[in-house]
Length: 171
Image (tube, rainbow, N blue to C red):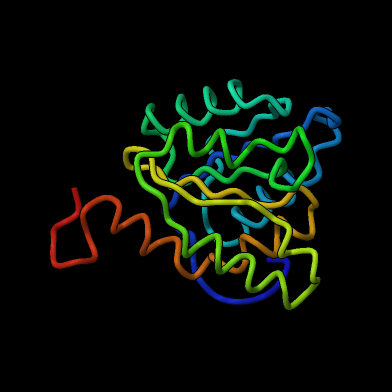
């Protein structure tokens, strides 16, 4: 993993969505880096895609993946900045049933240890059904660092979303 730290992702299924109008699938370094880190930590990448910076298309992809039930976590990369085309957090909010603000806060907090520009990230985290959606920055380094920041929490978050973790049996 890029930054170091713990947290096995064994048994977790991930989908990775790169949100970028300027990149082609062959140029998707952030998605590739996230996929490599997920697999290195024992997670399974069940889907990867690239969507242009289009709120409706991003929301449609998130909804489709979450509603299919084939992934536990969707990681998005890109579209979290201040630019006029940066609409990934809005697309995530469009499909969310609940928000998970602490994950985004943790990503920004840890990012600030690397660069003051982390304060400009608008990435969020949310739940749709039984799927956790987390917005990460678009650069490979920042995306990897963001994943590393929350990696120790993901297995517990997924278990809790599925009814475990609070004295309830998993669904």
